[in-house]
Image (cartoon, rainbow, N blue to C red; front, side, top):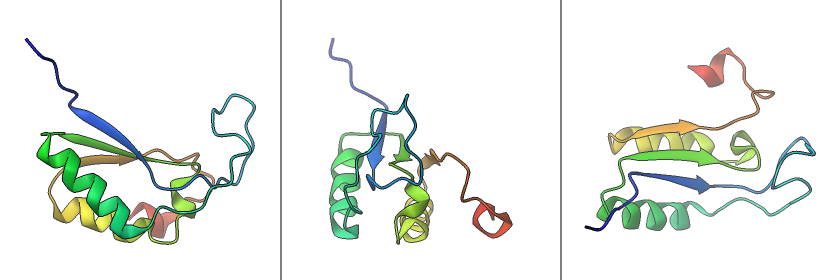
Length: 95
């Protein structure tokens, strides 16, 4: 019997507004993943029946198109979360 994963983390940026000692990405300053790359990764994972997506970074809310990515996932009707340090959240972003 083969076991397949049901969830995937997609790191959309390496940029973060903190340098936490415990973070495996601390000090990493890679830029944003292009939207077309995100879409290709997402489509490939969906073909593999991935059911849950966790959007990570760095700090994913620093990605200039994080709202577009969230809208895309919502429109695709998949379960997803955004793992953030919370420092950039405000009422508008939460909505």
